Length: 185
Ligand code: GDP
Ligand code: MG
Image (tube, rainbow, N blue to C red):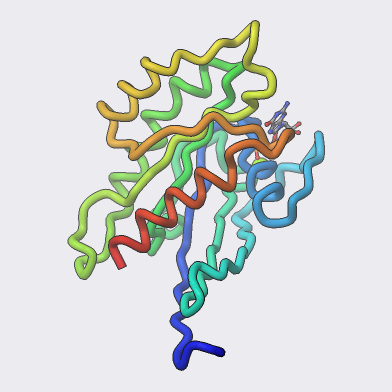
Protein backbone atom coordinates (compact mmCIF):
# COMPACT_ATOMS: atom_id res chain seq x y z
CA UNK A 1 0.00 0.00 0.00
CA UNK A 2 1.42 3.35 -1.09
CA UNK A 3 0.87 6.67 0.65
CA UNK A 4 -1.41 8.85 -1.38
CA UNK A 5 1.03 11.72 -1.52
CA UNK A 6 4.84 11.70 -1.47
CA UNK A 7 6.47 14.82 -0.06
CA UNK A 8 9.82 15.74 -1.57
CA UNK A 9 12.40 18.10 -0.13
CA UNK A 10 15.63 19.38 -1.63
CA UNK A 11 18.31 20.63 0.76
CA UNK A 12 21.67 22.21 0.05
CA UNK A 13 24.26 21.29 2.67
CA UNK A 14 27.75 22.80 2.69
CA UNK A 15 30.89 20.86 3.55
CA UNK A 16 33.61 23.32 4.50
CA UNK A 17 36.93 23.39 6.35
CA UNK A 18 40.62 23.52 5.56
CA UNK A 19 42.35 21.76 2.69
CA UNK A 20 43.09 18.08 3.25
CA UNK A 21 40.75 17.59 6.20
CA UNK A 22 38.75 14.99 4.29
CA UNK A 23 35.74 16.89 2.95
CA UNK A 24 35.76 15.21 -0.45
CA UNK A 25 36.41 11.83 1.17
CA UNK A 26 33.44 12.29 3.51
CA UNK A 27 31.13 13.17 0.63
CA UNK A 28 32.38 10.27 -1.49
CA UNK A 29 31.95 7.87 1.43
CA UNK A 30 28.49 9.12 2.27
CA UNK A 31 27.14 9.27 -1.26
CA UNK A 32 29.02 6.48 -3.06
CA UNK A 33 30.44 4.45 -0.16
CA UNK A 34 33.98 4.55 -1.54
CA UNK A 35 37.30 5.78 -0.18
CA UNK A 36 40.52 6.72 -1.96
CA UNK A 37 43.81 8.11 -0.66
CA UNK A 38 44.01 10.67 -3.44
CA UNK A 39 41.18 12.83 -4.67
CA UNK A 40 42.38 15.57 -6.96
CA UNK A 41 41.55 18.97 -5.57
CA UNK A 42 39.96 20.67 -8.51
CA UNK A 43 39.11 24.31 -8.91
CA UNK A 44 35.48 25.30 -8.61
CA UNK A 45 32.43 24.05 -6.84
CA UNK A 46 30.97 20.60 -7.16
CA UNK A 47 28.18 18.80 -5.41
CA UNK A 48 26.97 15.29 -4.92
CA UNK A 49 23.36 14.22 -4.57
CA UNK A 50 22.04 11.68 -2.09
CA UNK A 51 18.40 10.64 -2.18
CA UNK A 52 17.00 9.48 1.14
CA UNK A 53 13.71 7.78 1.86
CA UNK A 54 13.20 9.66 5.12
CA UNK A 55 9.83 8.11 5.93
CA UNK A 56 7.19 6.20 3.93
CA UNK A 57 5.80 9.44 2.57
CA UNK A 58 8.87 11.69 2.59
CA UNK A 59 11.81 11.75 0.19
CA UNK A 60 14.77 14.03 0.82
CA UNK A 61 17.30 15.03 -1.80
CA UNK A 62 20.51 16.16 -0.18
CA UNK A 63 22.89 18.26 -2.21
CA UNK A 64 26.31 18.10 -0.54
CA UNK A 65 28.48 20.97 -1.75
CA UNK A 66 32.21 20.42 -1.90
CA UNK A 67 34.43 23.51 -2.06
CA UNK A 68 36.93 21.61 -4.17
CA UNK A 69 40.16 23.56 -4.13
CA UNK A 70 39.01 26.96 -2.87
CA UNK A 71 39.90 26.24 0.77
CA UNK A 72 43.16 28.17 0.49
CA UNK A 73 41.24 31.45 0.56
CA UNK A 74 39.79 30.58 3.97
CA UNK A 75 36.46 32.06 2.98
CA UNK A 76 33.86 31.60 0.30
CA UNK A 77 31.63 33.83 -1.78
CA UNK A 78 28.07 34.56 -0.80
CA UNK A 79 26.97 32.87 -4.02
CA UNK A 80 28.47 29.58 -2.86
CA UNK A 81 26.67 29.74 0.50
CA UNK A 82 23.38 30.91 -1.01
CA UNK A 83 20.29 28.96 0.05
CA UNK A 84 22.20 26.41 2.11
CA UNK A 85 20.11 25.13 5.04
CA UNK A 86 22.90 23.43 7.00
CA UNK A 87 26.64 22.83 7.04
CA UNK A 88 29.29 20.36 8.09
CA UNK A 89 32.56 21.95 9.18
CA UNK A 90 35.44 19.49 9.01
CA UNK A 91 38.84 19.44 10.69
CA UNK A 92 41.61 16.86 10.76
CA UNK A 93 42.32 15.48 14.26
CA UNK A 94 45.99 15.00 13.35
CA UNK A 95 46.49 18.69 12.42
CA UNK A 96 45.65 21.22 15.20
CA UNK A 97 45.90 24.11 12.72
CA UNK A 98 42.82 22.80 10.94
CA UNK A 99 40.92 22.97 14.23
CA UNK A 100 42.05 26.56 14.79
CA UNK A 101 40.47 27.36 11.42
CA UNK A 102 37.07 25.96 12.43
CA UNK A 103 35.90 29.13 14.23
CA UNK A 104 36.95 31.18 11.21
CA UNK A 105 34.93 28.98 8.87
CA UNK A 106 31.92 29.28 11.18
CA UNK A 107 32.21 33.08 11.27
CA UNK A 108 32.51 33.26 7.49
CA UNK A 109 29.44 31.04 7.14
CA UNK A 110 27.32 33.00 9.64
CA UNK A 111 28.24 36.31 8.01
CA UNK A 112 27.08 35.16 4.58
CA UNK A 113 24.05 32.91 5.01
CA UNK A 114 21.02 32.64 7.30
CA UNK A 115 17.95 30.49 7.43
CA UNK A 116 14.99 31.71 5.37
CA UNK A 117 12.57 34.03 7.17
CA UNK A 118 9.88 31.32 6.96
CA UNK A 119 12.11 29.23 9.23
CA UNK A 120 12.67 32.12 11.59
CA UNK A 121 15.99 33.33 10.16
CA UNK A 122 19.16 33.08 12.24
CA UNK A 123 22.28 31.01 11.66
CA UNK A 124 21.98 27.74 9.77
CA UNK A 125 22.53 24.54 11.81
CA UNK A 126 26.14 23.39 11.80
CA UNK A 127 27.74 20.14 12.93
CA UNK A 128 31.47 19.84 13.56
CA UNK A 129 33.27 16.77 12.20
CA UNK A 130 36.52 15.71 13.87
CA UNK A 131 37.72 13.62 10.94
CA UNK A 132 40.44 10.97 10.56
CA UNK A 133 39.54 9.49 13.94
CA UNK A 134 41.17 6.26 12.74
CA UNK A 135 44.48 8.13 13.22
CA UNK A 136 43.57 9.76 16.56
CA UNK A 137 44.90 7.32 19.15
CA UNK A 138 47.48 7.33 20.62
CA UNK A 139 49.31 10.22 18.97
CA UNK A 140 46.37 12.58 18.55
CA UNK A 141 43.87 12.02 21.36
CA UNK A 142 40.60 13.91 21.14
CA UNK A 143 39.52 15.91 24.20
CA UNK A 144 35.82 15.12 24.39
CA UNK A 145 34.99 17.68 27.08
CA UNK A 146 36.91 20.47 25.33
CA UNK A 147 35.07 19.74 22.10
CA UNK A 148 31.70 19.70 23.87
CA UNK A 149 32.49 23.11 25.36
CA UNK A 150 33.78 24.45 22.06
CA UNK A 151 30.53 23.45 20.34
CA UNK A 152 28.41 25.07 23.03
CA UNK A 153 30.45 28.29 22.98
CA UNK A 154 30.61 28.59 19.20
CA UNK A 155 27.10 27.71 18.12
CA UNK A 156 27.66 24.18 16.82
CA UNK A 157 24.77 21.81 17.42
CA UNK A 158 27.10 18.93 18.14
CA UNK A 159 30.36 17.28 17.07
CA UNK A 160 31.05 13.81 15.75
CA UNK A 161 34.34 11.96 15.51
CA UNK A 162 34.37 10.56 11.98
CA UNK A 163 36.49 8.47 9.69
CA UNK A 164 35.91 8.50 5.96
CA UNK A 165 38.46 5.72 5.75
CA UNK A 166 36.71 3.36 8.18
CA UNK A 167 33.23 4.64 7.36
CA UNK A 168 32.65 5.72 10.94
CA UNK A 169 29.92 8.12 12.11
CA UNK A 170 29.38 9.93 8.81
CA UNK A 171 25.91 8.49 8.35
CA UNK A 172 25.09 9.32 11.99
CA UNK A 173 26.29 12.93 11.73
CA UNK A 174 24.35 13.55 8.56
CA UNK A 175 21.22 11.95 9.95
CA UNK A 176 21.46 14.14 13.04
CA UNK A 177 21.77 17.27 10.90
CA UNK A 178 18.88 16.20 8.71
CA UNK A 179 16.71 15.58 11.77
CA UNK A 180 17.34 19.21 12.78
CA UNK A 181 16.39 20.44 9.33
CA UNK A 182 13.23 18.33 9.18
CA UNK A 183 12.18 19.66 12.59
CA UNK A 184 12.29 23.21 11.20
CA UNK A 185 10.34 22.25 8.04
P1 GDP B 1 39.72 17.74 1.31
O1 GDP B 1 40.82 18.59 0.77
O2 GDP B 1 39.17 18.33 2.58
O3 GDP B 1 38.64 17.46 0.31
O4 GDP B 1 40.37 16.35 1.75
P2 GDP B 1 40.40 14.96 0.94
O5 GDP B 1 39.08 14.30 1.01
O6 GDP B 1 40.98 15.18 -0.41
O7 GDP B 1 41.38 14.12 1.86
C1 GDP B 1 42.74 14.52 2.06
C2 GDP B 1 43.57 13.27 2.37
O8 GDP B 1 43.17 12.73 3.61
C3 GDP B 1 43.41 12.15 1.34
O9 GDP B 1 44.64 11.51 1.17
C4 GDP B 1 42.40 11.23 2.00
O10 GDP B 1 42.53 9.91 1.56
C5 GDP B 1 42.76 11.37 3.46
N1 GDP B 1 41.63 11.12 4.36
C6 GDP B 1 40.38 11.67 4.29
N2 GDP B 1 39.61 11.22 5.28
C7 GDP B 1 40.37 10.36 6.00
C8 GDP B 1 40.12 9.56 7.17
O11 GDP B 1 39.03 9.54 7.76
N3 GDP B 1 41.17 8.82 7.64
C9 GDP B 1 42.39 8.81 7.02
N4 GDP B 1 43.34 8.04 7.54
N5 GDP B 1 42.64 9.54 5.92
C10 GDP B 1 41.65 10.31 5.42
MG1 MG C 1 38.44 18.17 -1.62
